[in-house]
Amino acid sequence: MKFIDEATIDVRAGDGGNGCVSFRREKYIPHGGPDGGDGGDGGSVYLEADSGINTLIDFRHARKFLAERGTNGKGRNCTGKSGDDRVVKVPVGTIVHEDETGELIGDLVRNGQRLLVARGGFHGLGNARYKSSTNRTPRQSKPGTPGEKRLLHLEMKLLADVGLLGMPNAGKSTLISAVSSARPKIADYPFTTLHPNLGVVRASAHRSFVMADIPGLIEGAAEGAGLGIRFLKHLSRTHLLLHLLDMGPDCDPVADAKTITAELQQFDVELAARDRWLVLNKTDLIPQAERTQRCRDVVKALHWHGPVFEISALARSGTDALVHAVMDFVENRKRLDDSAEDG
Image 1 (cartoon, one colour):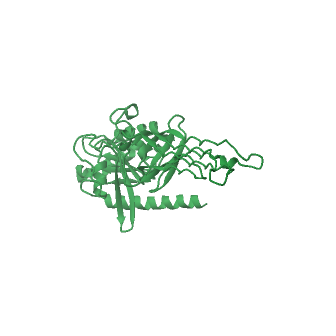
Image 2 (tube, rainbow, N blue to C red):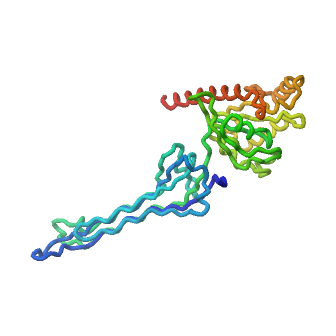
Image 3 (spheres, rainbow, N blue to C red):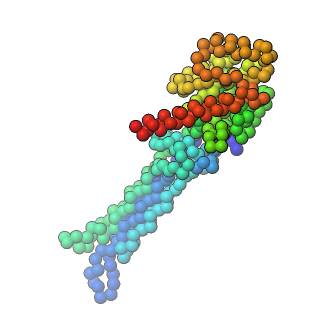
């Protein structure tokens, strides 16, 4: 299925039904009085997060969503039927903005969460509502109000605890396939990953976190080179970034790291300041005698003071230590976030 993470849709709530002007007409009751009923309320439009959906591709063709109109009131004080609501399913992690103004309407981050995006019109009033001691035969009624109409911009951002950063062929897809059940495309040429992938990483029986792999960045990505930086937004919800470097003999990991850092800062300063760990990958390609010194040289050249892990995702060497360290970090961060919310 093609991965689409942005869409624009037109939502229209149903109009309220009109009130009725009617008078009671029965044999032997010559002055029955007004009995016009109210109209029904118009249906509203809701967006609902569904964990079974992972792309916005369905909105490429179906872009208009209408709720049902309320029916008009009738005589004998019969109230019109309210229109049915329209529920539109979207992926978990969808952010909803007003298309014209950019106003944030809501963020759907839990499965089953609903967001009202267009409220249905209010029902009109029948003439029975206007009866009084001074107005025994009211001939006025009130029409229903129109339902809201909105043009919405939907943007999906993956919900992941950890995100992978790196140049094309740094081994991000190999790592996520090694530590989770995700099976992204892996090949020995650049840009084999064309869209984000998610994998659930299990550190033990009841401890797990979600890892996100996005297409690799290259120099000039902020200006649209390669696949650009459009997928970087999928890392905005993560607690931790793992910066993978290809330590192969034909690569320049220092230059690659500086390139990724520059593109990250140009895209989002806040994202660039997030916790980031250095993961030196493909260390199995370095002779054993040179491996330790080469890794030290890279860390020193980058003036790196954060955590550093030496792994081989293909050989699954060092991945267990990385997974358990990430699990501890994610659990601690979630505890801090929960404490901040409670406080």
